[in-house]
Image 1 (cartoon, rainbow, N blue to C red):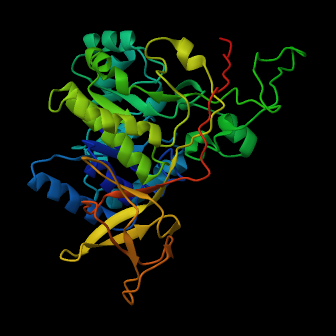
Image 2: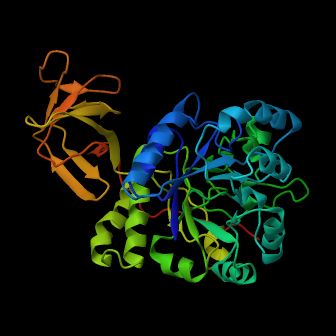
Length: 423
């Protein structure tokens, strides 16, 4: 099965590919459902072309999908057409869309680039899949409400259609993400990429006008509850079932999330898939899979794949993790002295225990590293984002490695309260 990772900007794209993704999906300007992600702009297409060529020389094919999955108004289509020549400079391997009006437009402007149907189109049955095949789609990203049993039936009915399904990440309380809450409560449309995540807010109760006194059955804590907040999806232990169902491609959610999330989640699923295919042992994959607990997440479940009962359970737990992203390892400065560029992303005080992680390496711990000011060669006692810094460490690091530190404010949350939303 193909592994598709999220990339909210160029740096995250580089980490997605480096840490094991076969493909990554990105958004362009204002045509993606993640407008608040950095997205791609300027001449970044040049760097992406170079990256793909470098991987190809090493015998690795890396693919790039473009998410154009907003609901288009006429003005949006006009804006897209005005930018079409710019988009053509990107080495896209597919467009991900939900708006059927974009089909003839893309087929005319980009006839060689395949179309993938976005999960926002809410395709969950074999007849719909057949219709999209006839329209020219190569792949369907099924709605998250589809069970493994239904997926197997769809694949058997339309075997030539590629099937992609979400395997990990945040879930939405609304059907296939078609939510109006954000637009109503915050004036920001989720269907235009501006979701304010109203479902994650805390509420006292929910009462319907015509049923005064009738409330959702909720369990409250501190006077509030998050009855709309879905659990996160995690199918890392069920990849064999997904393969048996006929799924061709596994998709990780999270273009808005950090490069730390992108890298470690991608790496975990890469190792799990490699173990499933017999490329590595299951035992050697375990440490990488266990790292999912160290990535920001809420309480997890299996969504609708086995039963909607699990998907109906909500959670009060905020997305959290025991580590902070301290920074990343840049280019090698002096091999003889073991000096590397350290790109700081959070404030770190010298002596803080750091952990170094690579695409194929377990965490290496070091408290005796040295932070150095490149301007004068003197040791730094602390460093934070925006401050040039070098690092000397005994860890066998390479460019692109991740550096993390324990979050002193983190405490594990146990006994998470749940509630079931009525059908």
